[in-house]
Length: 281
Ligand code: AMP
Image 1 (cartoon, protein in one colour):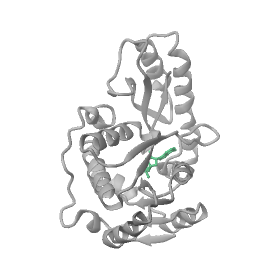
Image 2 (cartoon, protein in one colour; image 1 turned 60 degrees about the vertical axis):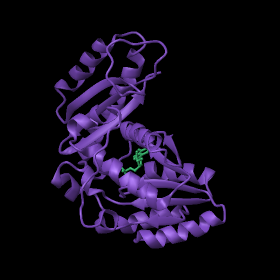
Image 3 (tube, protein in one colour; image 1 turned 45 degrees about the vertical axis):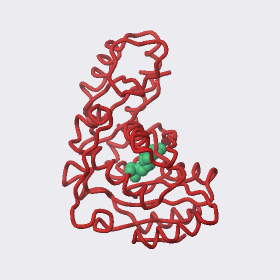
Image 4 (cartoon, rainbow, N blue to C red; image 1 turned 30 degrees about the horizontal axis):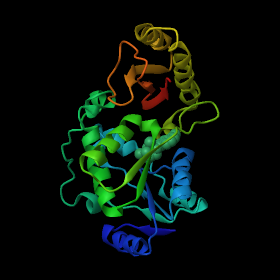
């Protein structure tokens, strides 16, 4: 695997490959890699000649300084994992290399997608995500970029950004990779205590029950039921639960037969904030 920390040397390397008509699949990550990340890499490998992974803990997408400081960083292990799945290129730049002198976000308008769900709870988060992903796309210039449905709102926002700016690449969404017990894999899981990790399986169990109920119950009934499930939970604190239209990400109250819906949830397990979602149709 070739490892680059400078954008210019990476660009030169990739343009040589492009000149040989090699296709490039790209997976941006923040590291602390797990099987969820590896599932994106495997998907990219099936469709591309070269797979590029970036590891960059993007400061501008964190609204809380301690969350950025505490974000797990496991570079040596990440490199070993990437080598074990025969990833071709790792891009691991410094903050200065990506942002230059000013570590600030561009301001985006994603047609309102940025104001829903995570946007309500994480100030400036999607401006940070948009800024770094746009910059990484310019550097890597991939044919296809792969994003997890785990961060479904992020996936829809990146698709919107690509469309709005007519960027010359495809964006593919990949299924959520879960532990055997249903917990969605996340770099943040490494920071869970044993008790919180066990308790966190309740999140997906609740989402699966939500999916069942969606056929027979009203949206309001389901939301009340979920709120009650978490009300007296000793280890988990519900931040939000919502049923939203997959396209607009707007919360719904009444189901319409021709629309696709998803349930979205954010929960605190102690200090650790976990998100998950499930398609309802
Ligand atoms: P992160 O390193 O958390 O920024 O994630 C990098 C990419 O991996 C994003 O597109 C995530 O949505 C995706 N990802 C993270 N966890 C999972 C998972 N459990 N299943 C599928 N994709 C995931």
